Image 1 (cartoon, rainbow, N blue to C red):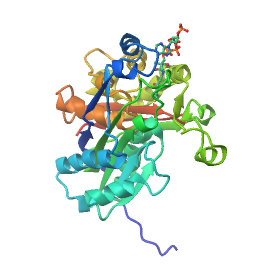
Image 2 (cartoon, rainbow, N blue to C red; image 1 turned 120 degrees about the vertical axis):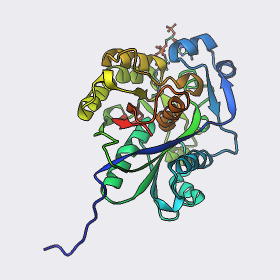
Image 3 (tube, helix red, strand yellow; image 1 turned 180 degrees about the horizontal axis):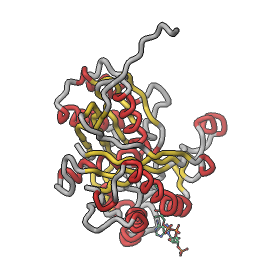
Image 4 (cartoon, rainbow, N blue to C red; image 1 turned 90 degrees about the vertical axis):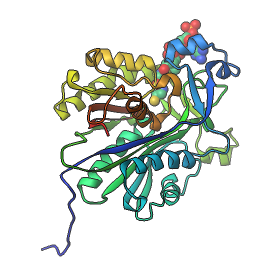
Length: 332
Ligand SMILES: CC(C)(COP(=O)(O)OP(=O)(O)OC[C@H]1O[C@@H](n2cnc3c(N)ncnc32)[C@H](O)[C@@H]1OP(=O)(O)O)[C@@H](O)C(=O)NCCC(=O)NCCS
């Protein structure tokens, strides 16, 4: 017989709070068009983006993450020492190691927290939510901070006509802890490595070292990603609704990854989402902030009264990998 003891946590977990951080500098489409052959009109029509925020040169992924997570911890009414884990989803932390999460945990005063980064691009936050849910329910941590943060302005080629207009910077964070009732329904997730090159860094760091190639900016095959998102992601969202036992008409909010307004509209149609269900459209003034997009959109919907605490919301993240994850949650 095994001599080991194990732990078990509470039966249910939920998102207790959300906090966002938007950098001060607003970048208009006209400013983007100073470096690419495009127009404000084209960008608005093809993506729904009117403006995005760029972090200051000396403002890091860690700075933005600390600001968002600090807000979420304060709103949850807990002390940083009570946080058992910090999960940070990003693809734009500029150091291979150590992780951004470790620095964030230190700066938050989360002295009892395990900390690590999640590399799942735009699906990273939703990957973090399901991991945190299992950590709380499994007894690994009482409270888990999940952060999505990006400084995409550092990794986007501002002269690349096929991607320069889409990305923005920002951070969003939630605290996940125990709940008397189910607060996070089963996650439908996956990955498709056959499309590894659809959104990728142009070259590896080894190429930069050995072959003298330029800084490896992100590159994106827009049409390929667009088609995949439109055709493959609505069924994933539908499966998440089914797994939660929630009908589309009973949803309190739909908070999809803010990739492109046209992708959001196509998903609404395929899901047959009734018009009374509010949909996050934060992309208009935030751009695509990859891992940060879902928590930032969630915060904005709650702040503006579009959605209320206690409502059910369908979340879905999808992006480079390709990766995807969807779940229905109760809003904090
Ligand atoms: C990037 C994206 C907006 C491009 O839109 P699109 O409609 O697919 O654009 P296409 O590449 O098919 O090009 C269509 C036309 O616009 C032109 N065009 C491309 N980029 C342009 C730009 N920045 N400004 C103006 N015109 C542009 C093309 O030259 C082409 O012109 P043509 O018809 O005369 O040949 C779109 O593919 C997209 O949003 N994809 C998904 C991206 C995404 O979500 N990424 C994040 C995933 S997490």
